[in-house]
Image (cartoon, rainbow, N blue to C red):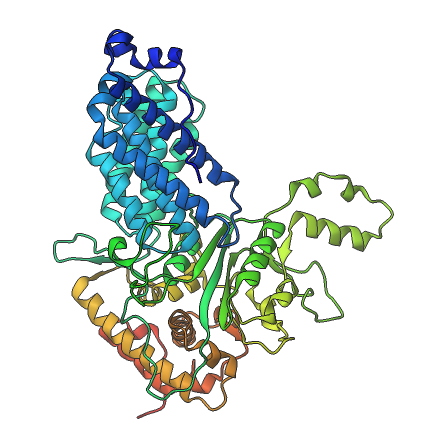
Length: 591
């Protein structure tokens, strides 16, 4: 295949570009070619980068070759400007903010590649480029130019850098970036009378609330905050006993859906989504030692460590969008693999009593409204009965995902987590196709003392993401020393191992749980779910049935969530923390 020719740079354009370098006739041919080649690479990179927006957001294969070509061009462009910096400075008038813009685009490429692959190592690469922009002050001269659009580029760079740092748990860097962004916004709004001042101030408020969402601080001896990671470490999931028979299914795909009203969020990522995302990822590895350039064929000597499950992050999707992504995941799900659906959403309840108890009679969870339908002619149908009109208006104004909507996808192994005020709607599932199916359901209400914390994320999801922090929170603790934290974490690992044994030794447990137990992520979620349920059942302020998590199929309580051995462990953990008084003790037998 013949290489494509660079686009011709007209004589007029060259004169404009090189006007600062002296008379055009004095410019050596080699330098002229350098500028022409740079212009070609710059135009090609912009063309490919803009084309990324046209790629489908779902499906895992169609986009890889395009990403590979885009990375190739940006790699060449980056090296080219490094090798020919002096010529480009003199003849092209290359400015530092333009170098920063190239580096920012590469950082965005790595970040979007992470979103599409769920491989956390690419976050480190994005961080490297974003960090270089800051360390080398590529955008430092932007404020001296009377061009507000350049300042906006700088502000957007800060916002993107903050997102990457949040995902990598680099909270110290986040706090520095927020301060710098605040100063930049203040300078921007002072110099330019713009209409987007309120929007940028909202960005600051969102990220400030996001980094303060954790209810408990872990402190060093000097009172500095310890940054804890909640991704899966090598010793994170309890090991299976030798010879234990469990399913060989592996988690391949996950849909993480956030549609809670008024929950803290940043960059279309709610606190609940953020926590569940990290619960489904391993700790990042160094990219250079793990794999080749994105979009290229992986080498044969790549480490055999299992990849993270692929994830779709859907913030307030419409029903149609949600169903489209579900169908794409279902279609591409490999054999012997599991699809996980995580729903963090406001509950939608039935409008009236129903004589039947079908999969659409108990309501569901909220999806985003389709305004075209609400504002369309359909709501003016006057020939329908009053009840039909009420039902129609309810469905239009509060479109929801019902349990019955997920039935088609139960043809393959399905693991569902519902964190909602109407999670019990999913308790009435019917397994039509005999495939492994488990639903973990949050409490539908919390004690009044804890309800004010809902904006900072759900307690149920916090238990699935960071069970020790959740345990401290319900025990009334807001801070802890690092040494005690590590001691409790070690004890919690022992509790998880014992919960795993309770599940695998149970004689009455539904086999669906054991089918999923071979996967590390699902095993950890199941053990954390049981720890959460047992903790709430023993806690003195969790007294109503609706305060407890439930599951489909039901777990045998006496062998799991109300097992005396587990209850004793929880009291031991409470004793270590000196909070035993908040738990009931008469729920266990004497040993």
